[in-house]
Image (cartoon, rainbow over all chains, first blue to last red; front, side, top):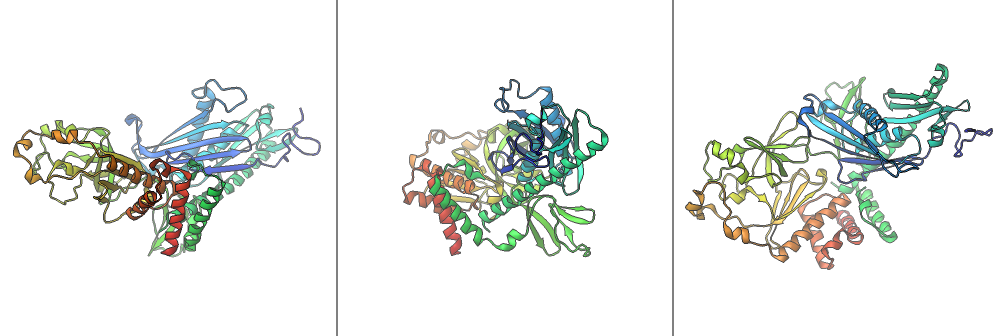
Length: 241
Length: 327
């Protein structure tokens, strides 16, 4: 099947190096300490952060830093066919662990010994790149909750179809069976904290594709930074002196 | 933003936006210049080694970066980032409202919306008979007579431990002169409203007795606001000695049968909704503003449940814009 037309257009009309449209909203869940909705094209994800708060299970308490728990679920209605088991299946467990490790690398855990930070992410609409959207939403939610982080973690995916590196794959391109590289990046420090790939790639092409994903991460980071700055200013001028 | 909770029609949206734009123009420009997000560089002269790096900052490769979203504050040599929205960080002397979550051996654990539950020691609460004495085992076994799980209490932060755990003591308005057990202010006829804690400022007075409405308002620094019925505390000297020797607290029968007046209940609901409106709009919560909104809703004959609707919220925003532009 042709994923990149001879004119250089993909199935949804994008250019190979073009990302999908980004949209973010902060503070959607008023009960949570921090929350955010993040959209990458048709992929829509909501994240809620609770904490730092008292540990529920005293046996899991860590004496010198905070405990991070993460849960990734897909809403029943998020994919084409109604999902029967939204959480507890292997893919969800794996992605929960991946998101948790990624966020642990950027939160300053030593500031809250003996406490617990809960991150809940749910996919409302899945169209490829859900893992990346979840990490971006979690970053926004953590910043909204006022939890100190050493940097903003952003994530983006890239692939290689019809001998062309493609940025930000959607579901159709993802399910083509070609390579799918997901990168999580600490944007200002320029350090990669997450690197996953499906299928296989020769090493030189892999470097190109990974670099492309890193560029995507930086673009997402700029957008997230704008959103957070706007939100901070708004909160400040509303409350007054 | 929280206003997504209230449904507004097109005109209301425009009016709200206009009111918020007025507030924006009234805010100082220096404030918006000092806004930072995570990993932003804080402009500071690093050659000056006497700079103190406070909360919310991180020294990375010789540069000072912010770890939170917030405003950079500089006081003398201290540079720190004041995060707007965060959980409550206890400070000594703050008056807080909390909910008891656990009754432990010689202490109560109280949920105060902080990183850890607050700890209220048995010894920090006046004994039932009012005498200053060491707590016995009988006192420990009778702890539930004072506070049980899910009770709402008000207390003051005595000190804060290293990991931000607050030690509390039960506060009485009449300093040092605990007369009747209701001075513990176990709060049970009213509403507990949770607001973002940055909207409640530290003031001299946190307990507000509104006698004309029969309502007690406690603005906890931790963002828990109590609006409840004002019960007149009896003077302990008049207490019958036989009541005291019964041990523990026994609520006198007349208090159990006492039902709150309808008017008082309506006042409680109206004031609670005023607090909720302020929380939705993100404005500072002070007693003056609450009473203004209360009077506004009564003068316009707004139904209590309509106070959380779009129209009243927009009116409050417009009022606030007016008030701030006059100041």
